[in-house]
Length: 201
Picture 1 (cartoon, rainbow, N blue to C red):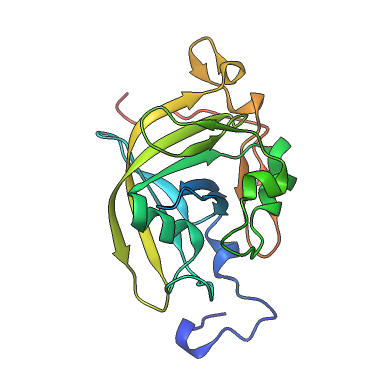
Picture 2 (cartoon, rainbow, N blue to C red; picture 1 turned 180 degrees about the vertical axis):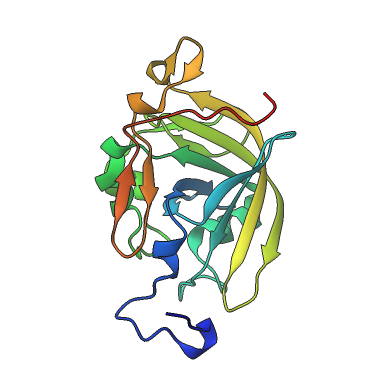
């Protein structure tokens, strides 16, 4: 089949997310100017540069109690910082709980019973038990085409790695099984790895 997005796809559900997979999940923790904290997962997330290390995530919806966006992006606008918490398979249920359309006054750490710890380089909380946390200083917020589509790019200022994730000095993904977002209501976990040597190496 072929379709132009503006004409519709004619399928029961939008296939776009199911085609661009798997996508890592950025579990974004933020703090507002008033000190309130928020934790929410975003699957439009990835690393975008090595030096300095930079990541991005995109928010593509809005809430009635925020100014044309959601809690995470609104908090980042106010404070200029955020933390990316890496999601493991064992945290799938509590991660999913934090994706709900909760009012802005709800603290998802408390709501889902998630332990928090302070970041080292930014004034923000992080998921204490996550396999890794990337503390970020906002570089820019980019307005994308469409309604309420915003992308935040952050420079990574500090990295936490849980001790049991490292094996022989390398990050061993099989030790925590990263969770990935697929399409529809589907997810996947990484349990097997293989290596490829680049040409010329």
